[in-house]
Length: 247
Ligand SMILES: Nc1ncnc2c1ncn2[C@@H]1O[C@H](COP(=O)(O)OP(=O)(O)O)[C@@H](O)[C@H]1O
Ligand SMILES: [Mg+2]
Image (cartoon, rainbow, N blue to C red; front, side, top):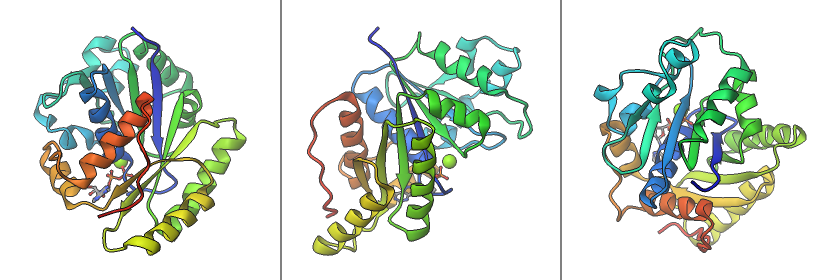
């Protein structure tokens, strides 16, 4: 198997689209034929099983593995709607005592089984930080909203100081109502403020919301699908032109 890549998806603020981005980038990479694992690194909260339409299939979670009750292969569940994609769900226990080394050990162990390991880091704390630090690539998700941009900038600067330099920006929920000059200007400001290279712009797309809550795959014709599959291809190393026009 080619060298694996750990990708941490993070943001300075909740609700920006970390889980949505994690699920759709993972789906995009799996559709390109890469063996991909999505890890939900949250504590006591879950959503990726719903977004991926497998909530009734989940038998185990990362907490059970970390507590030594199951082996690593039982921790992940295959996603039905695309080949090559599996999910490790968040633990049900919000107070689980996980030390950072142990979480890191899990990620490193996953490298033997998957080409891409996408980690949805729900918030930032010491155990999550150790995973971000070990990631080969960090996707920083922001929306064009001023508060979100400022928080993204603060987290990005913090990570940079801590030597996490391979960061890429995803600007999510860009409204299709802004066209032409307006949007170019807005997105320029976002990029300059957060200060890391852009990997993709995702439109505000009602399909993302509807499909996410129903556990359905995004229709290939919608803007959200196109944006996420372009991001997946860029991660894979393809030269996909960055388009920041939202039509
Ligand atoms: N590009 C988008 N267009 C429309 N709705 C979106 C988009 N991205 C995320 N959402 C919606 O925003 C909400 C928060 O997204 P989520 O991925 O759960 O954020 P986070 O994991 O950062 O808290 C969800 O209801 C999701 O469906
Ligand atoms: Mg989330």
